[in-house]
Image 1 (tube, protein in one colour):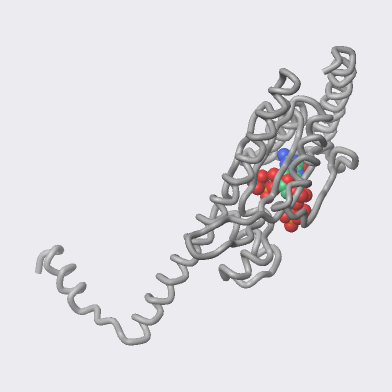
Image 2 (cartoon, rainbow, N blue to C red):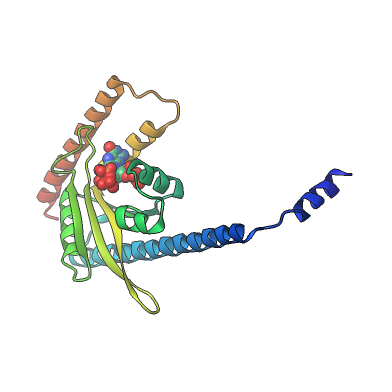
Length: 227
Ligand code: 0O2
């Protein structure tokens, strides 16, 4: 028998039992449930982006400058979701993911000055459809490696055809200098095969301090320029 005919014969002999069909059906339903939830996170991310775009527009009209230099959004990848859930010893279910992960939807807002970070965070948090669930101020209290940013976990509604759903979004607000350090540190740390020595960590910490000095000097200039 030729290879093609053998493969055809093998395929024809696969008979699905009732329980196989049930497993396949459940897998299909779960995958649909997962994709639906991810699309809700995507909508929530867009809502948050729009809120910041509106604030940026308003401030630029009032003050002739943009407090936001850029907005980057991302949905957590499936492999990162699984890795985090396994690390936290969670059941790998869609409902456990929604209940326990705060950063499936992430919006990063890169600001011009430190003052803009707090001004924008305040302006977002007074909006009546935004609920603050958690705040971590790594600007006032930087991480031991020098990482700085303001992290907010908020809950906001998205409006679907027949329901309103509350969705969690992680927002990271940081200055250009903080973003420069964090982006390069991330690249260096996750470069495959690189051994991160104590000396390299110290050098990175020094760079973090330099970025803090830069933010402070730029802020003095901002005050002198009266903007
Ligand atoms: P990615 O790819 O950006 O998503 P939690 O969610 O509270 O359980 P954790 O780690 O305590 O977990 O949250 P935390 O400290 O608020 O930080 C989470 C995110 O902040 C990270 O997401 C990074 O984006 C950023 N971050 C925190 N510390 C550092 C750091 O030292 N360097 C850099 N470059 N970024 C940092 P993920 O999931 O790691 O990655």
